[in-house]
Length: 108
Length: 114
Image (cartoon, rainbow over all chains, first blue to last red):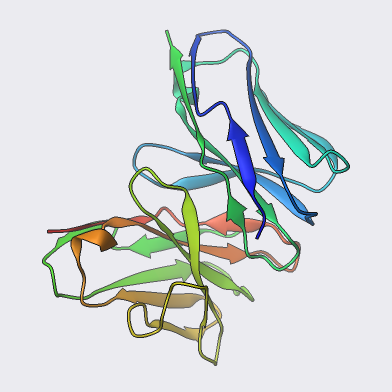
């Protein structure tokens, strides 16, 4: 089973600050997902990565396959970015292993 | 992308009863998955719902407790049977998308067992 570690566990930022969340995993994968979970519980898929870097609006996700590491960056953070961000890895059988999540709070 | 709906969105149930959660997708998908997220925990895969055959359960989950149906390529149900307070969780379904290994998640069902 793939061990997925996220850091930090909790993060508080002031509006406008740059935020970075890290994810490390132990076994080779075919893809890595970054997910966002709001207090109601619903999950939104932000990115799916198998290599390199992706950008969507103020969100940037990178992955280094050799180092088994990914980062999610939020530029110019806003209070509406407050959520739990979850890293999940796919070992090529669709059965995702999830990190514990990073709780992000952005203060106005 | 796939649009997924779940019913109910939340429920409060009594110990010993059962609840069936529905997952509906707006297009045909090959694979559907059911996950559980216990309070303060990350998500855990319960089972893969296979169309036309029995679901494939992960270690620690059994069919008697979590029977799953998958009658067609757009719909699945998960039943939480003989519930106890430990079953209080968010239950989510997800689907793959066209063999691209991208997964989409439903909005979740928040279950509280008293």
